[in-house]
Structure formats: structure tokens, C-alpha cells
Length: 115
Image (cartoon, rainbow, N blue to C red):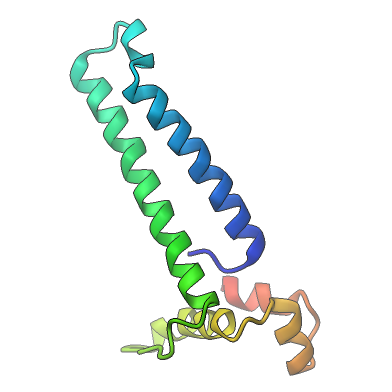
């Protein structure tokens, strides 16, 4: 899950790399190797799957930041930390801004969110 703007930028860069790799693979860049056709197909499918998952994470973060998600349902205590992270993102607060509001050091919020 993408939890801040830095991770969003990294995810977008990685998605561009996956798109370029997928385009090259689909254009036949693997044809020059002696890889079995089934393995070539498996590689393409793996890259396509990673790209799809990454794009879904990017969309989820962007929806939170745009305020499209108004409610965070929590079915167990184990889901509470992620719901709080989502609420911070939806409120358009950086970890630093949240720390300032809570009277904490800026490093504490990422540390709490990680654990």
C-alpha cells in the first residue's frame, strides 16, 4: 500500500518501467533468446500482473487523496492501523502534518504506521 507522496512517485516510476518492459517483451525482445515459448509467456504474464497490481495501488492512493473514499469500514482490530493510514491520506495530511497536530515528533508517525 502506498502511504505517502514519495512512495506514489516511486510507484509511478516503477509502473513506467514495467510498461516499457512489457512493451519490449510483447514486441519480441525475448525472441532473440533461446527461452522456451511457455517461459516467455510466463515472463510476460508476470510483468503484466505486477503492472496491474501496481496500477491498482496507485489508483487506490489517488482515490484516497481525491477524497473519493469517505468511509473506512473496519471488521477487526487488526485492520485499524490501515484504516487510520487511509484516513490520514484522505484528510490530505502528510505524516509531518499529522505529527504536528498531535504534538509528536515527525518521525513518530511513519514509525507508528510501519508497526
